[in-house]
Length: 282
Length: 256
Image 1: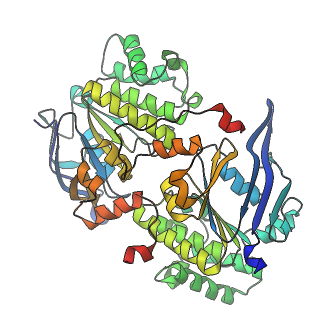
Image 2: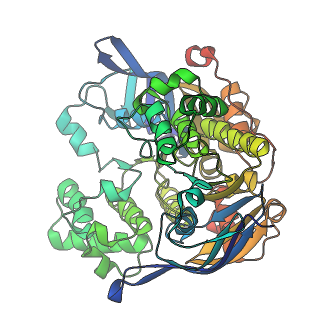
């Protein structure tokens, strides 16, 4: 089916520039990539531009930033020319974003149930009662045992893992076709992380949608995603199948892999990354 | 003889309805020059154990002896200087409006040590920073450099023991490698003893000789480095933590 093979998101030559008094700073430079119905990981260190990329796709970059690209296409929408009203209709409905820490990204003065229901009330013009039904079903889908009770809780009354499951249910209730997850499990403990990821994994494959998974955790991306994009200083240095990450050839990727302490290949000393100016250019 | 010996350590906070036993009768010994790890999830009490060792947390019971000397919740300066802490977040643990030199001088002033300038210069060199960094402010440093300053501040009193509370979890992988290497070098050179708190089993296995796995305020297992690397650990919770640091394991695979 052509619908299945066509990429959901296609970005060509995207740059995100921050004009400053001392000239233009480019946080992201000439990025080109496509996302289909798959899990794509974006790996990079702090400041590599991975989160800026995620935000630029949602057109949520800071007001001072300028996004330029040859093409930014999401399904049938041209993200470069879409109006702000069109973008509002897309955000949260067709593209959703899961952020790192539910403590800061949920509204503290609204019950979690209302927050989730708000999405479908706004985007699908559902009545309150129907929205409540949908929300309860969605909460159940993310393995929350007592959705009736959780519906009426405030964010400070739920644990980190439950908060992140609430975030996921909020992001998936409107059936988006692309999800951008920015470090969705970095604030969570190991056991809770497994649980949250498996829920996310199931929902992605069940609904056959695309996921951009932004992370700094090589082991996690390697085991969770299908494909990995490695970013350095705002550029893509390498794109590789997640299963082949161990055989990556770019010296930066190799450097990252060798700097990582490993249970399977213990080393007395870790390799220290020797940065080369050419990585930022080539 | 053990440099740290802990018996029946218990820590609780609050009273009445808010009473919470955070650490429950924990016992362990650490040999000189050894790295002892504490691993567990948030709220398991691992940092609290470290706080009690450091003398930061005073409401504990049990017996703790450090360097052959029994210590109580209240300690002398000399006793406090024997163990120093390095915290997780180098952004929060350095005074933003003090220069690095000022930050490093403070422990020397508190403990009344002489040759202050020489000591500051020496300790900066030890952690791989140029002496001119003493004139800088924390915001002029990168995360890795700041963590080096935090380590320098801990080392400037010539402690026997460093208490490391997640020293690399706020850092990028490549910077983490530098700090872990630095910690190993310093330990070899000065025969330091480390107690390391971390949630990352790979970091634990890299640095530690032994690790205590904590769950709900108790040790469920004390495993050796070899056991971790071979995967021959006893407790299922230890195994869960080991699997977790390898990445995502789909439940379908877990079941089979």
